[in-house]
Structure formats: C-alpha cells, structure tokens
Length: 134
Image 1 (spheres, one colour):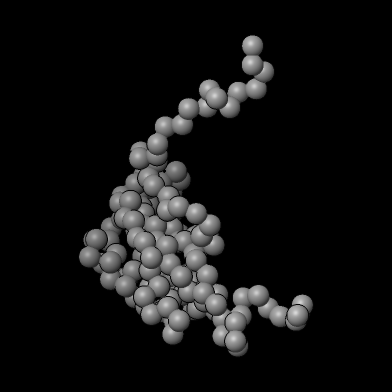
Image 2: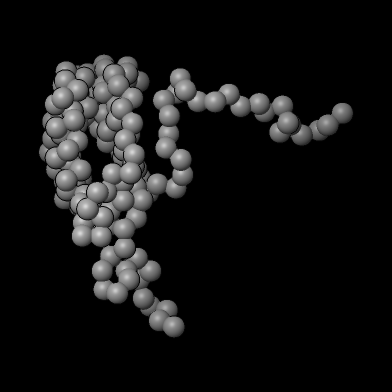
C-alpha cells in the first residue's frame, strides 16, 4: 500500500467532492439577472468528470438580512448543491468575490440533506430526549 498517496486523487486526476453554496444576491437584481449570474458561476464548476455539476438548486427568494450588508437590508437567497474538483473552486470563488451582485456567499463540503428555509422545517418533539425519568 502507498500510505503517502493523496486520497483525493485517483489515477492522476482529482476526484470530485460534493459541495453546497449559499448565495446572498443584491435584492435589486431581477430573478432573470440572478439566474444569468448563476449560469455563469456554475459554468466555472464544470469538469471533464462532471460536465453537469449542479445536483440541486433551491431559490429561497428575498429575505430580510439580520444586519446590513453593503448598505442593503434585504437579500435574495439561493442554495445550490454541486460536485466538482477542489481545484475548480479557486477560480469560482475568485469570480464570486469580484461580482458586486453577490453580497455574501459560503461554500462548504456537503455532508447531508439540502437545507430548507426556516419556515418549512419539520417540528421536532424533544420530550423523548429528556433525562431523569420519573
């Protein structure tokens, strides 16, 4: 066995990983403009191994921000799950930082189910989890 081999490469090429990104776009943009920006950004994620990188996209729409970002009180949220190589993220994130229509973004390694807007979360009954039964 080769203990020094990078587990993220296979046969000399990088393996894809699952990621998730939350975008907050300027709410002054139309939905058409946001979709155009998403198409351009997602084109940067395409690889030979994964020509269609997007696995799920969820438009949460306009929401009030917890605090102002670039003088804005409202942002348009989009959550996207995708697969790509780690090396493809470098240019993708560089372009996002330069785009003034993107107020904030966060890319994380996807380890589970797609998140839902807060209003659609199922209720959870915690009564069974209490300690100290009587």
